[in-house]
Length: 151
Image (tube, helix red, strand yellow):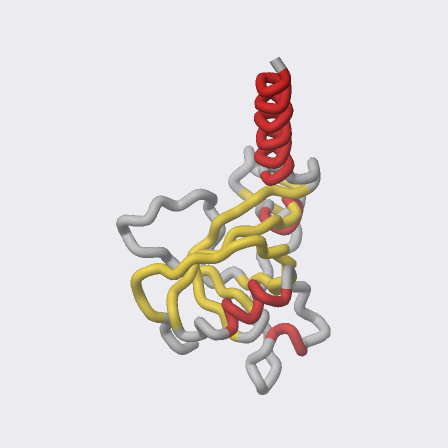
């Protein structure tokens, strides 16, 4: 009887550990897995390999600033020039399309456009004051087949 009790306690603890690992994202954020290339802490979304499924319609060329555990960021930094997929949390407002007011039956959108690449001479949008980069809190990454093109 005592062995059965210890077995049930062990199963309950194991189930709790699995549930703790699969936390739901906050209501204002969503978990994304995006293919692309990293340069330092800047991640640029690209088209993934054709055999890889796309999770979300984030336009290629979109930039994210990577935040997260130092060991994960260092691993990503070592993979510069290689095509990778990063998984992490992004605010829903940063992924949503441009805001504004619809006119002419929704065919015309009056408001701000999507974020654009910076105009700094170094080409680093993180150093440009007028460029608002979305932040991704990275939890994992994986290597994909392919290399990154220089921009």
